[in-house]
Image 1 (tube, one colour):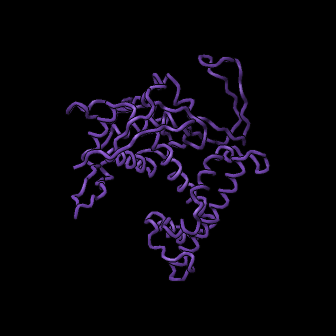
Image 2: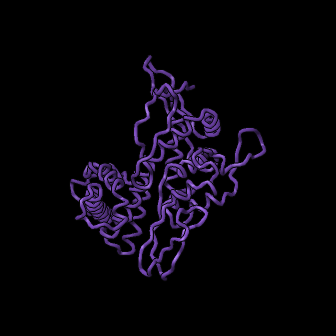
Image 3: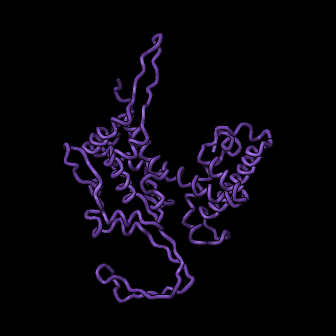
Length: 339
């Protein structure tokens, strides 16, 4: 969005977190007057973000037409090409800023909230398994390397990162498998659909405590389906409580420790179109951002658990699409020995 947007709306991140915390209440369609704190804050944050993004697009329109958006907007030259291109398309189709802002808000919320929340889960799950950590670092080494520049006049230079985004996205199957397995374990997406024709259904007698119970879904009603129930089902995912990135991998057969993706119907369903996971499929902004962040952090830093029992994965508490941890995870972090 550019630095000017953040300067004009410094509370943008706080509003995104408030929106994320109350997203499920918004999705349920509860009216604003219901006394649920997170629901009210999410409603206010969403309105504020939409107004901010509409003002941003009006300023972008003026700049694109050679006009002056005012001193408050200053230089908008650092707006990303993605957002600039979206603005050009919307202007070309005559879509007013107030209609554009919800679309950009969905993108902004998905990237900021999802990437920042799923990345720590990926890190703690990889770091807690030394063998997986070593394999991931070996896999990403050709595409992400920390470099220690030579000292000049005895002044130490900070380490620098050399990273190839295409290599990380396309040539690191184990890293991506860790991403998918973390989504399975630490994300709680859901799908919402509208019933086109009334029908009834019964609970599965193999898993239900009341197999005779049935439900009638009327035409026009809305149904929300939790994908977390499927993700933690032992039938498609044996030992669902175990972090096992090799569910989607098989040995490449070239040399030990090298992998390639194999067909996995369970994960195909997990990433099915229509669920929140569809935005996390291969090549998406969310996936690419997560993989790059994780590769960069693992390339530059070493981690040691503070807890004498070692790495302890925290329990979940509900938020938006990604679970939040119930407690902090303390670690000693130091820079890796770099060449």
